[in-house]
Length: 410
Ligand SMILES: Cc1ncc(COP(=O)(O)O)c(C=O)c1O
Image 1 (tube, rainbow, N blue to C red):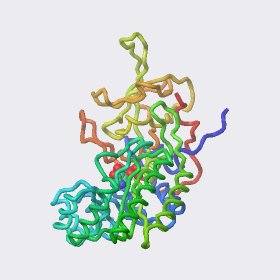
Image 2: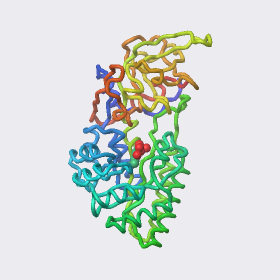
Image 3: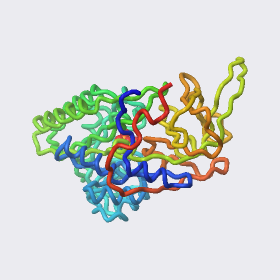
Image 4: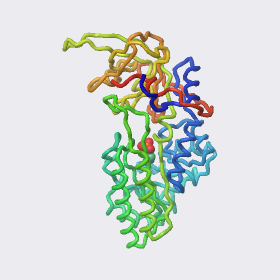
């Protein structure tokens, strides 16, 4: 027998998945707390503003506030949800560069005073509808090295950032910061190095214009650790090295800024992805001969792209079949319950190893599915309801599901 692999979920989450009788996405609050603590230990002094879009679940948000987090919100509704947790509005920023006049006015009314921006048009609107507010300018990044690049829709060039923050000052706003997002599930240290270089260049130019910022927002992008890539191989991001690069970058920017610089981060995925798992069930394992004559196994699950697994285009999820701890495996494509052919993964490059004996109704646990799952759920696509949410507040004790207990690699 091979050496046990790393723990994939805590004992608390294991217990919650095992006890749950209905389909549900379950969050391990203590596990989220551990991630939060490890982040603040790795990056001391960096203010954590959780990116709400990654998990807009009240219990998770309230738990994070109790740990010390603020929020990166992207709409008035998210701001209102953040305010309901009791967090002071000064710990919430409007991190979306895309917003209407009405959105800005509503955010201002709710008490938000920090706004992301990346264009002169947006600055003019903020000056009118949130007079005197603080703005931070988002710099474009290439998104290279990330599974989700978030590149062209947001952010401006270094030269534009100087013009935009000068314009903000001219209309009575406070040019307070710069931000970046290196792309979600960023896998390289180079992306972080480039981001720090770009921010450093802009800080120098701003200094020449007499603009001294008070903070830099490093965005999200920190990776989850439990994903498989599209071929079914474990994604192994160099997290420790990333933290070293970020610490060095923070130090360097502090040296060149000419002013006291605070740092903010907006992690989403890193805090919640590995701390959420879905309890679903098998609809059926079937085999069909395809047009090319090959026989293919398909594992149909009760949850898929439209109710929890939206990110299946870019990755594979680790599956565990608790009622089939061993036995013979067959390679299968995995698909959700809808009548939509996009609702499937492991079709092109590889297959997922599935116990041959699984039967309709058997439980399946979908690991590391906590990020963006609840926000990307559709309302009743083909009549399949969004998954309800649950959570466990138990303390993590010993590792429960290890790498070897999850489905073997393809
Ligand atoms: C502005 C902003 N900040 C933070 C995040 C969170 O990113 P991640 O989940 O990669 O940490 C996002 C995600 O889309 C974002 O748009």
